[in-house]
Amino acid sequence: MVQGEYAIPALRWRSLIECSKPLVIWTRFLQTVSPGAGVVMESPFSLLLSFCSLLAVLPLTSVQAQSDESLLLVSSFAPLPDGGISCLKLNSSEGTLELLHKCGDIPQPFFFDVLPDQNLLCSIYAETFGGPPTEEIASWRLNPQDQKLQLINRSPTQGAASCFVELTRDGKSVLVANYSTGSVISFALQDGKLSAPVSFFQHQGSSVNNQRQQEPHAHCFVISPCGKYAIAADLGTDNLHCYRLDAVTGRLEPAEMSLVPLPPGSGPRHLSFHPGGKSLSVINELANTITSFAWDAGSGTLKSLQTISTLPDDFAGVTHTADLKFTPDGRFLYGTNRGHDSIAMYGVQPNGMLKRIGIVDSHGAGPQNLAVSSDGRMLICANMPGKSVAAFRIDQSSGQLTFTAAVELAAPSCIRFLD
Image (cartoon, rainbow, N blue to C red; front, side, top):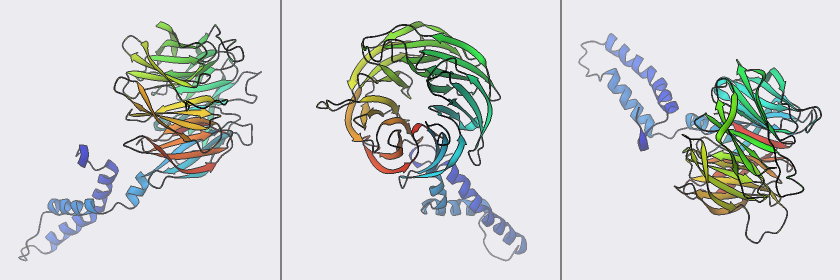
């Protein structure tokens, strides 16, 4: 297959070959019925190449349109009947979003994760969010044809306000963070079925903000790119908690560098590993900053690099950050401000340091969650209190965002692409 600048996507090659099959059959027929007729015939392979060459320079129509479209799932953090997960369609060429259908009714699924290649989805399931009783994690079979969800089983998270779910890429384990009770928990999965809890850790401590940091509040639990570690951001203690992870069994144990402190009052909420695997960034809800770390995957250690604001220098209102995402090529990072209702944009330097390149309106109140398309061309933002999902085009040179479309949806809280 041709690689590099002149590569033709695999989908396009398959289409060209399929379109060429009738020509090959016709050529073979002519050679059969008119032997010795004095007509010079090209070989079928030569004609196939000629035909493919002709098609290759023609504008792509249906094939291109299909490749420009992708499906994404968005959760609605609401009680039934509004609560659930819905399927949307994004056209990256046109920048349009379309709400297709609801995949399943789920009470208050604040967060979820999905493995499209295994037709597996795990979500928070909360009849009453924040307890009592404690929330549950639910495992679902995802129908690849219509994206409908079929419940496999549920298991208690042993915590309140369960707010984050992360699956291992092999689908054998899942991790959960519990915000109100400040704990993390892991489960094994067998053919999508949740086991009894495998590991449970209760965080301890507090920090300087008397309103928000009197006790631990685990807010995310993210698996490292190598799959051997998992890191939880605890908003209540201003710490990152680092664990070794056995991805097959789901067993956790504190890593050698088990606690990594952030500046007092930061309130770390979400973190994201750089696609290159050598750094990570943490968005701090209370301080409205992003702190970047160098990451050593061999030793599972972190070294602080930088803390940078998500807000304009002259902003004095009340606002709190929520989520951050890198582009797949690792050149740009985006973070949300709820209150200022904006998305901060950063260029990523080779050493992992960030340089802010602008701030744009989120086109909805309370930007809660972000997702970037696999081709890096589009960013999607869930504006939870604004009841909208907004799409932005990513400039491939500058990283600047341009708003393209939005659709209404009840309390959108989490986004995942199905590719």
